[in-house]
Image 1 (cartoon, helix red, strand yellow):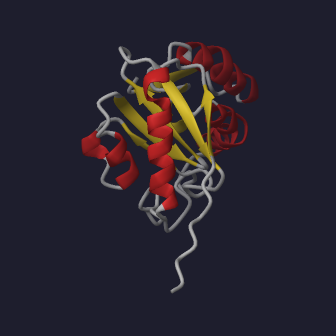
Image 2: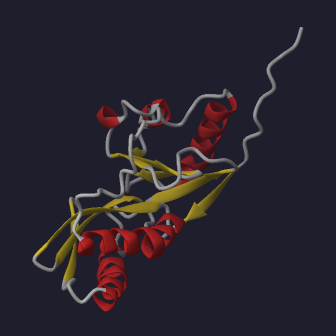
Length: 194
């Protein structure tokens, strides 16, 4: 009798600037390029059975899935050394069973770009996508354009960036400096929903 061959799953863990978050990096893509899923609580996990299962661990406070990694944010009163191997092993077994990390939403068009955007908004989104998103993903998070009005760019910080002690520094010293230098129309960058 033939058995279905299991997909080899390799996971390594990466720390990031948020001491309460840990990035679990997998050896294959979990989502399409540039698409991310942020789950602040168990009730928001309708598109991810994996995130739903991770919230069954009392220590888990938030789950973020994009590219080839899952970022888990723990509750502050728990040490990573107590739970990191348990969470890694759970993600590994889940993926080895051939299950999808997320139920992919289908996009009729690129969710990042909208033909009705002004030229300035298109430029802002392009800079965020090309220069900032890769660096933020490296740290286990994501940045999403929210709005631009009267010189103020508003963004959403997700994953390990949400609630990170250094996110304000990243926002002002990194993102705001880059956008104001590249686009004189931009005067300030603010984070929504932190």
